[in-house]
Length: 248
Image (tube, rainbow, N blue to C red; front, side, top):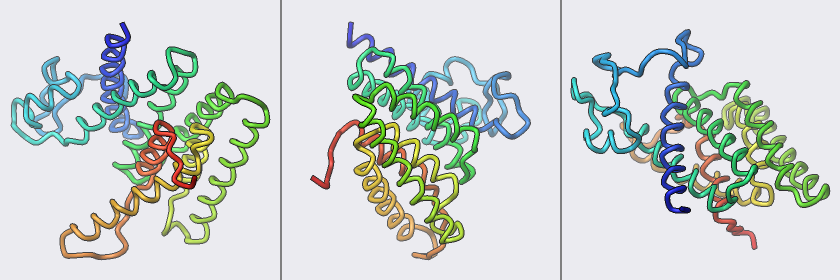
């Protein structure tokens, strides 16, 4: 039974990740995010069931549209696989509890924010507020005492303020304004893993940033804009699931 549940959770996460990607493409564009079938961005063919199986459709069709053979970004498949895996890890970590339900909802909102930040390098305030509320609810459910909840909240506030000051002092060059509420929310979500999560975020961001500078066309150049929310998501979730604290 646990194995079947884990398989079901993987496909549920992958399907919801795909749907979240559709929302991120349509929201704030005037399109309806809940009506209308998905279409190929190149030939505009309406996608059917064979095109929409999470992960498998992309692999079977070798990352191309079945009709026009145009490339389908690998990002879609990666997000489906990653979110599906995170659903399974969440179940293994938290069990079949109310905590799990809140955590999975938070993951979906975070997935939307990451999608949107990668596309537009901006974080919608509405999604930041929802992420914050869900993270606070999860922190309340996880808190062993009022003191532990207060400690989690204090650390999260300090981290959020630090990100805001980094934005303000650099006039937006070093950090975006939307990164501050996301950092606060993720710090509330992971609790005692907040500081390790912050470290991992900067480590991952630093490594990826170096690769981008070295491999970009025309050689290394400063000034390239890289969304930081994906690194925050990777770092904090890595700290939460591994519980590894490099400071100890």
